[in-house]
Amino acid sequence: MISKLEGILARYEKLNELISDPSVLADMETWKKYAKERSDIEETAQKYSEYKKIETDMKNAEKSLETETDKEMKDLLEEEYYDCKKKLAEAEDELKILLLPKDPDDDKNVIVEIRAGAGGEEAALFAGDLYRMYLRYAEKNRWKTEEIDINETELGGIKEVIFSINGKGAFGKLKYESGVHRVQRVPLTESQGRIQTSTVTVAVLPEAVDVEINIDEKDLKIDTYRSSGAGGQHVNKTESCIRMTHLPTGIVVTCQDERSQLKNREKAMKVMKSRLYDYYNSQARSEYDNARKSQIGTGDRSERIRTYNFPQGRITDHRIGYTVYNLPEFLTGDIDGMIEALKVADRAAKLASVSDSE
Image 1 (tube, one colour):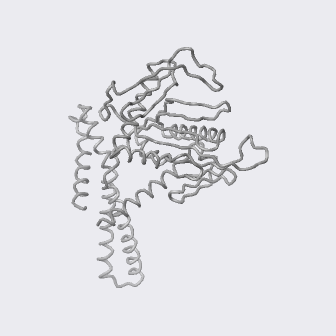
Image 2: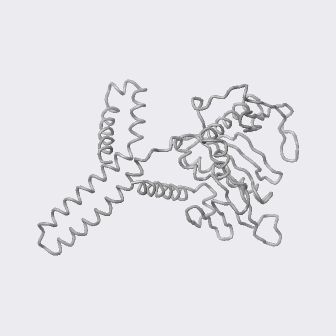
Image 3: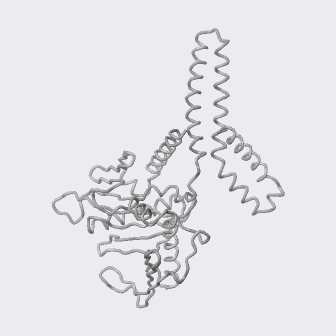
């Protein structure tokens, strides 16, 4: 491990020189390539530099302990030694995680699908709450969002919405949001004050790029139809809506967000490519179906990754047993604490896996 880290640190230092070289600065494409490579290894290189400093401090404290005779000074050196030893072990664990192969999809844009599950109109209203939460989170990260398809209810809820989020690291953060989200609250239509439990399913897919997915036109069946809003009223009188079916897999995508048939087709194709990318990354169709179910389940009330309890102002993620009491702020996009806790748990699981294999 150390030899690999030494190589990364040496390359990082070399890249620092290269991106400041006038000849490289004159060639923007080469500069971008070096800058990206530097960015990719920067965290590992800096953590290893920190590791080396701690190791040096620990060895110096150990060496001084051998010759120190003053008891008070010896106690201080001993405290410093054990403090360094603890920090060194922590840094080593972090370096093991950083050396693990990174998820190649982490830096990608995402396609997010939100669907109302069990609970009728209340589930649709909460689906709208989650949609707005992710839009605000994206805004805080300065990511761009684009609505692809939406099916709203008469009371302002959302039966289903598909949208894209474009920004570096979007999938790396939002992939933990896939699953069944359960809400417990008193519906606005409930006169007896009884708490109702409803569910919403969320699926987060990495956006596929053209070089990864090549779709043969003959494998697609494309239907057009007129869009309709809540209550069945026609939004427009032209058949601008698209229903795209991939015949080999049976995957279906609809889009009616734009008045232009061409734009709806482009948006539908973006979603189709992402779903097919997810599909073909699985080893077999059965594994794909299981992966989708593990993400979004059936929408049944008994399945959940997270519970939003309004009477208590509580959000609990059941995968890691993490609870916070900031529900109003959470729904305005303040979800970084939850995502960071999930990332830490994920890293701990990976570290345990590495330790078991050694």
